[in-house]
Length: 236
Image 1 (cartoon, one colour):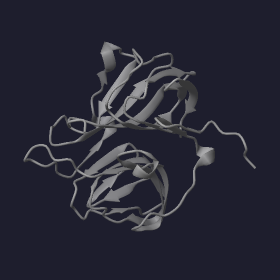
Image 2 (spheres, rainbow, N blue to C red):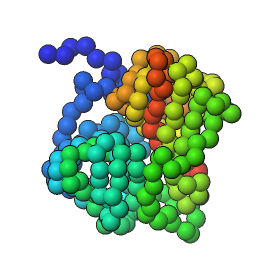
Image 3 (tube, helix red, strand yellow):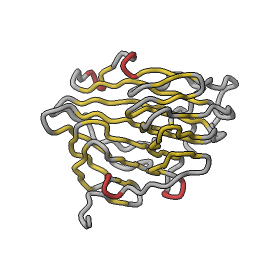
């Protein structure tokens, strides 16, 4: 029986660690389960979950825009075959299905589309390893890879951020963007609100708008996370 946890649930943030994960199917899932990390039921304005597939597992089309990042194994998104580190953006209103031939895991983000310009984004796929990194605040120890194009048709962004051991964000941030963050590798210390949390691979963090936030990498290996934020829309 596990009675200790690093997890915490606050008004403006949530740390969800693997010993507290609960798995359950979502509508349209077959031979798959979801660990729901963020949703409107918990204060978020988007839905994020980890989908765990058995062989033959599927996600039905959800009607909203969907982002899928493969954590391990391989996954079919429409006609495309994706491996670990590959990703897909599925435009709202399309009937693209997600299917697994063998056991695998993927991070999934879903949200209603907030139109701004007449051109709407189209479904596409990509691979993180094929994206050239940029450096946050010109710090070569902090690499950012943008998985969503810099195009006003998109109303959110998804990046991976990789910190060498000892690297840190240059400041405590307080801003209007909401975040969903999945730790992929390594670990460190996260400040959320006025609290400090040790974090490691497998943890999930939800940060509400204006939640004070900061991260520093600790240990002997790099820390890396996948991070979502709403973007380029008027803050209503």
